[in-house]
Image (cartoon, rainbow, N blue to C red; front, side):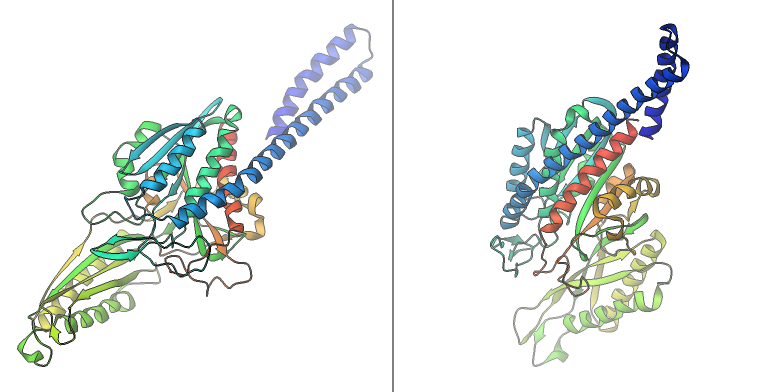
Length: 464
C-alpha cells in the first residue's frame, strides 16, 4: 500500500518535472530520465527511512527486554492474590509515571491504566495484562522462587504466579516503554490496562475486567480494538497460538452443600453420612458430560475442585461443601448442564436421606471470542514476528479468561505465547496452574515484540 501511495505522489512530481524541463528547453526523453531519477532517489530515501525506523524499533526492544525479565522475576518473587495486588500496582504505577503517561490507579480496587497520546491523529487501542497470582505453593527451583503466603478461604496458603500473570504484567510494562519512546510517530493512542483479579475476586467482592468496565473504563477512553496475550504451557518457546471466533470457554463457579446428620464413625447407621453422599454426587456429575451433552458440537467440562468436611477420623460430620467449575461454549449447553447438575445433586441427596443445595455464582466469564476480521488483519503481524511456521491455529480451549468482557465491547484479539522449553514435550510439561509451572524466559522477548508490533501495525493501518 505504501509503495502505491509513493508511486502516485511520484507520478504528480514526474509530470511537474517534465513540464518545467520542457520550459527550460530540455528534450522530453531527457526530461523523463531526470524525473525518473528523482523519483528513484525519493523512493530509495523512503526505503532507507523505513529500514532505519525498523532498526530503531529493534534497538528499543532489545534494550528493554532484560529489564522486562527482571520485572517479571521481581513480580514472581512477590506474588499477590486477586484484589490484593498492592505492591504490583505500585511498581506498575511508578514505572508508567516515569514514562510521562497519563496514569490512573485504584480502578477496580487495585487496577492501573495509562493513556499514551500519539503525536498524530488516529484511533485508540487497548492493550491488557493481568496482575494476580494463585493460591499455589511453588515447587519450581529457581532463584526467584515464591515463598509468599496469604489467607485464602480461611486457610493459610502458598501464593505463586502459576499462570504467568507476572510475565504478562512485565511484558506490558516493556511495551509501554517502547511505545512511549515513539509517541511522536504514533498515529493514534494506546490505553494500557493492568488488571487485577483475573482469577476471580474473593467471595463477596467484585473485581476483574467486569468491574473495570462497570466503573467506566471503555466509556472514558473508547478504544476501537483490544489486544491481550497469555503465556501457555501447551506451546513451545518461540511459538504463538491463535484462533478466530470462539476461543476460550465460558466459566461458571458452583457450590454444593450436603447436609446429613452427625454420628460416631463406629455407628454410621445412627447418622446420615454427607461424605458418602458427596462421593456419589461427584461420580454422578461426570455422567452429565459423558452421557447427557452432545460433545460432537462443543467440548464441555464439569470439575469438582475441592471438598471440605469433617474434622476427625471417627466422626461422621453434619455437612460438607464442594466447589467446582463448569466450562461451556454455548448458552443452551450451559443451561442444560446446570439443570442436569441441580437434578443430580438434589436426587442423590434425597436417595441417601440427606439434603443438598446447589448454587451457581452469577459472576462467571463469557466465552472469549476473537473478532474474525481483526484476527485476519493482524495474523500477518504475528507470522512476521514469530515466523509463519511458528504460528499455530489452536483448537477450542476449555480454559477461561475474563478478557472476554473486553472483547464483548469492542473487537478483540487474544493470543498465546509458548513458554515450554524447546526440548520438552508441551503435552507432558507442567501446565498452567501447576506448582511446577515454568516459563522459559526466551519467550518473554517474543511476547514483548508481538504486543508492540500489533499495536504499531494496527495504528499504522488505521492512520492510512
